[in-house]
Length: 156
Image 1 (cartoon, rainbow, N blue to C red):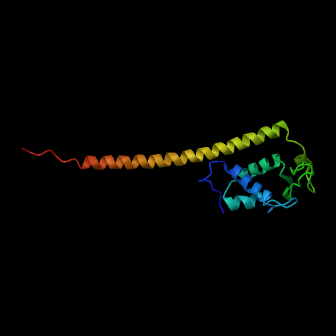
Image 2: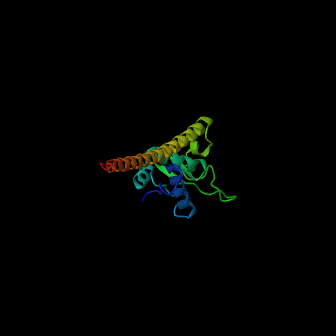
């Protein structure tokens, strides 16, 4: 399975986060369930590790998942109030995930996401440039072909 990269203009990390978010919202992944590992998602979608990690960061920021070093990432339990995830919920919840991000961590996350977005945009630009180069080459070949077919003036 691959992400709809050609059909979706969003950066790949946003697409991965949305894919996991839909699994959570549909109940396919429930509170306490282990999220597919970064490596599994990399192989499934053909993405870089940093891309998947940015998707995980996004879901952590939203309070949907938490991580335990050496064990993986898990779905948070919803809070009792309104169904939104509880910041400290989940068995074995790591304290670093329960507290808000520090300003440096938040800045790092935002910059990482911007870098991923820029990489995605750059890849699109490279594809567009390759298409333009091919079109220019075809036009040059066409013009060269017309120049070679110019009839010689009749001799008197």
